[in-house]
Amino acid sequence: MARPAISDKDRERLIHAAQDAARQAYAPYSKYFVGAAVLTELGEVYTGCNVENSSYGLTICAERCAIFSAVAHAGADNVRLRAIAVVNGEDTACSPCGACRQVIYEFGPDAVVMFRAREGWKDSPITELLPEGFRFL
Image 1 (cartoon, rainbow, N blue to C red):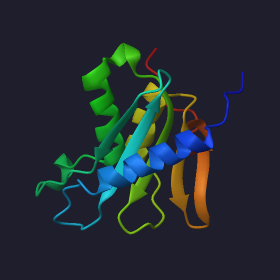
Image 2: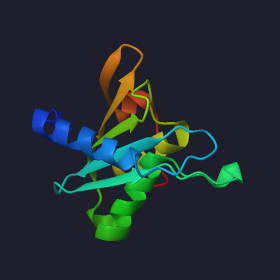
Image 3: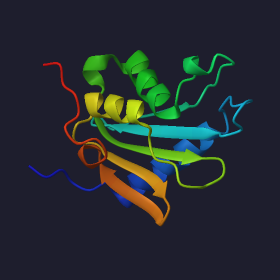
Image 4: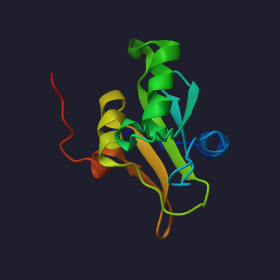
């Protein structure tokens, strides 16, 4: 069954929330400030930002930060993603990395991912960004 498109109101709400989150990012090394906002099927919005570390492998992306924040606040059983918006401080192309795509898929296999592509804003189903996403079950 096809899921309804994200409303203009929800789109604007998510993008603004992601922009606010990007201003909280901790990116002293890359200077690449990223924010994300997720919309759950329950209508809740949670945000996250990238947090870098001098041991770079310990860095967390904004998308995973937002999803993990949702889990921490609502409990994993209440986190089913409808959509996620991703932005950066430079307002340039910024799509989720592979690790984030897998986590988005885990919590929202039908989620819409909104991000700035080279040609402008793009809405993509996560299954387009991560075909054949991994499922343990």
